[in-house]
Amino acid sequence: MSRTRILVAEDHEIFRKGLRSLLESHPQFEICGEAANGKEAVDEAKRLLPDIIIMDISMPIMNGLEATKVILKESSTARIVVLSQHDSSHMLNAAIVAGASAYVTKSQVARDLLAALQNVMSGLAAEWRRENASPRRSPAELDIKSQPD
Image (cartoon, rainbow, N blue to C red):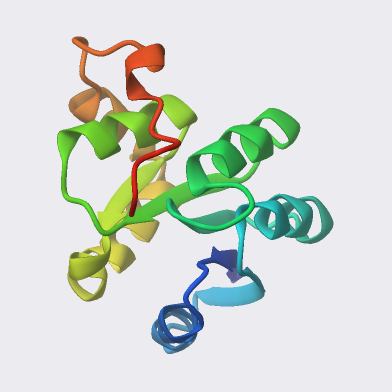
């Protein structure tokens, strides 16, 4: 059985290492790399070709939503699970518009991340996107460059 290759993009080293530890405890996952900012995430995604990227929204140099857009434009195979401190419909919709396959709040990582990864791997991400997309907001309304995470 092949393992799912994951790139972890998170600017806080302790949280990034915690994600690595959580995922490495499951034999179906292989952490193929880490990134500490959005530009590194884009570069590492090109170099490593991961199956899934766990992407923090708020990162230096390039935020996670911008990095998500660039990565998905350049690679149609990677799936992205967005992480955020905020449990808001605004952030969720911004992640959907950017092309995320799943959205997990940092406060619920221990409870929700593995399920989100399973959904992405099993193809349930499209259903999640349809269920959570807000028809009331346009992509222009969801520009969150100045929003803190």
